[in-house]
Length: 87
Image: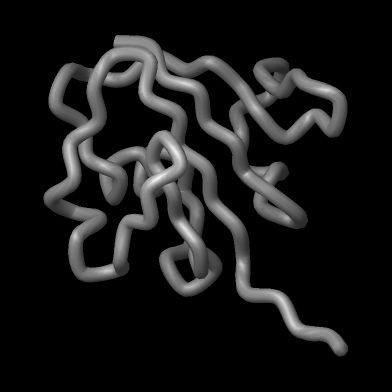
């Protein structure tokens, strides 16, 4: 199944080579097995879990404890932000 994955800030480097698109080059349409979970996508892309602070599926927040059980559906959009600091 196809899903749009957006990895923000320094996480964009985890997208497979040659797949990044969009104005900032941080998103891609990727193919996954049916029933893949948010955690499964992050694992397949080798994104370290500790770098996944804010995770949304179709704009809905996915808490850390639910990521391994949250199954994606065809055409879902997964967006991930790392922790940020500043002031």
